[in-house]
Amino acid sequence: MSIVGHTEQLAQLEQDIVTNNIAHAYLFSGPRHIGKLTIAKWFGKKILSIGQSVEEARYTEKQCDRLIHPDFLLLDMLWVQKLSEDWDTIARFSNVPQQHRAKPKPKTTDTISIEDIRAIQERLPDTAIGEFRICIIRSAERMQEAAASALLKMLEEPLPGRIFILTTESIGSLLPTVESRVRRLHFGRVCAKNMLPLVDGMTEDEQRFLLYLAQGAPGVLTCYRENPDALRDARMLHERARSFWKTVSCQERMKLLDILAERSSISNEFLISIGLALRETRPPFFVRAAKAYSKLVFGLQSNTNRPLLLQQFALGVSQELQ
Image (cartoon, rainbow, N blue to C red; front, side, top):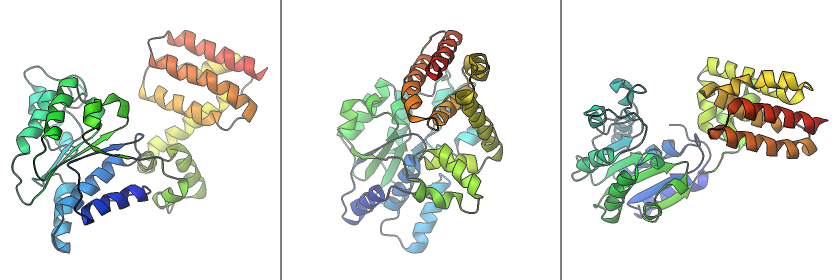
């Protein structure tokens, strides 16, 4: 498992194990693709390996990686009707039973329900092998209020040796009472120097562009590095975004923005590319245009008339350049 950066947090977690000061619940917060889930898995495996020989620890790690270790529970991908219905795929990301999500009323959202938390609760009482049982919940902000309340009860009355590790991108979306029952670690963006091992063997141009796209998020860099087609598409979007800020024609700007007319994953990526390309502009213009860009981002997240919003953005940018 490759982990880059976050040396202070890793050292703190190591110290918790060495000093036998492992909390019953942790909350790893920080931006998306920063490495929170990777470190949660690493920490869980370290706990389950306590007191084992080197050979036994390697076997434990392999079992956890394959999600077949009976004391390693992971709730990551959820079964969602018409979105993620392949049980074999889900089994590679989650090993908490989810059959309840498909019946009698199929789940249509990626929210964690009280039934999901109950499925975890049923697995907690007895450990199969050692002293500990680990439960990792990715993106805990997905929990419905009833689910969060059910989890809170388990956190308030923790069973010995049961360790919860939650991750979140939005700390403010969690119940304050849940946050108060966990040991919180925040993970920030990783500096480019620490991410260089992830681009080893690539050309200088590829390294520079990947680090630029990642913006300190190792997960973003890894995804693009392992998907050449996605990287090629990202280059095209970035060049299009740069053209938006360089052109002097308002009509041309509107044409370049047509990707944003409809909600889609590509439009979201292009919106990010526009923001990244804006950073390459001159400081005086950057300050003024950044306000218009922020207004655009906020507007696109709401139900605002998208074509009208894009037109206003293009006109506003053109006026700033005059």
